[in-house]
Length: 297
Image 1: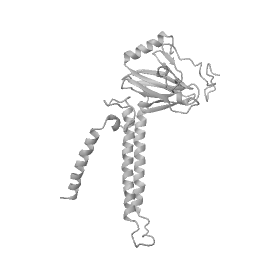
Image 2: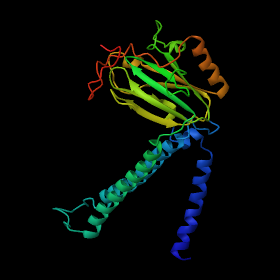
Image 3: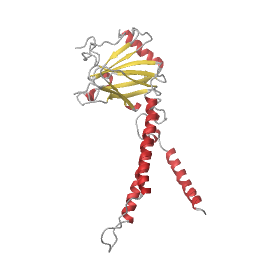
Image 4: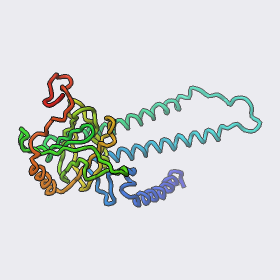
């Protein structure tokens, strides 16, 4: 039997076994044990699978390269080891152009490949929705979060908002989840979040969404996505921002559209309407403009 046929017949059972093993994996395992996935396979957002795909495929390529490299190193250690009775140095070889070209071209292909796939996915992740179903302003402050839900009016008079406090702990060090700032999002609706800071640099990180965005001083940042699974998700600041950085926690609740509207109505009933106040801003002026922030000190 020709050698190529033997290789094909040998590869067939390996492929079948690999497919069987992968078919028995849970969504969490198939996505590299990253958060954001459940047993029914529904991702947390429309971008979650893209991020996990880049992560898992990168590791697969790196592991293949590592196995080949380790195998060649082990083979060289065994094949060219010093035998009994041998003395002196082995034959010295230099200027093996095919090997040197191989060692140059392959890493270059890997680097360019990683860059191309990363740039492709980043372009999608960083593309902002121009006409989202929901527009929200998330404001980081030492050491909590404020959320404003914009309405249809440009003046912001129909907006509603909530102001949060930093995580409260009991005597045993457990966080009181009921007092954490909570951001509500409607499921299967496009969301655009404007990210701002009241004082220092923060970072808005929803862990299960597999993405985070920094919040700068005097500059707005944006994040667009669509939540695709109802549930409560943990969030935190991912930028060291001071003494109580670890207590800068929040929750995200992805709910039905009806429940989302009901929550906005409760904020209106409390009188928390219009543009969110900036009385707690600690920025004396906007960097680079000299413009004074009303209420700042």
